[in-house]
Length: 69
Image (cartoon, rainbow, N blue to C red; front, side, top):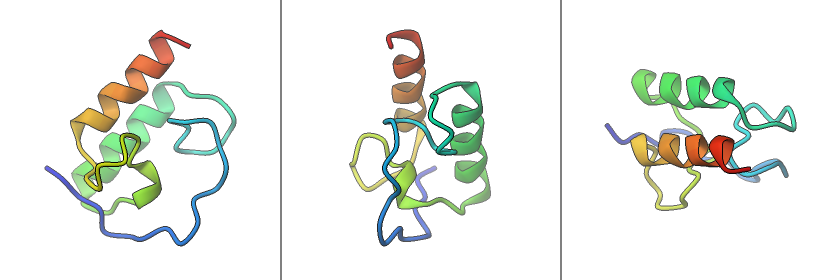
């Protein structure tokens, strides 16, 4: 599945992978991206690898950010 349905005019400044913009990258950020992929309603700001597709590769990058701070 690859979804990006909502354009983000300007993504908030945040830590890479911090999809809820709380200042930390953790499992909640993974859950947010997974839910958005499954629902088909994603924000371009969640495209961590900047390939214009939101998919499992973005989740893997968030996991790597968590495991290798």
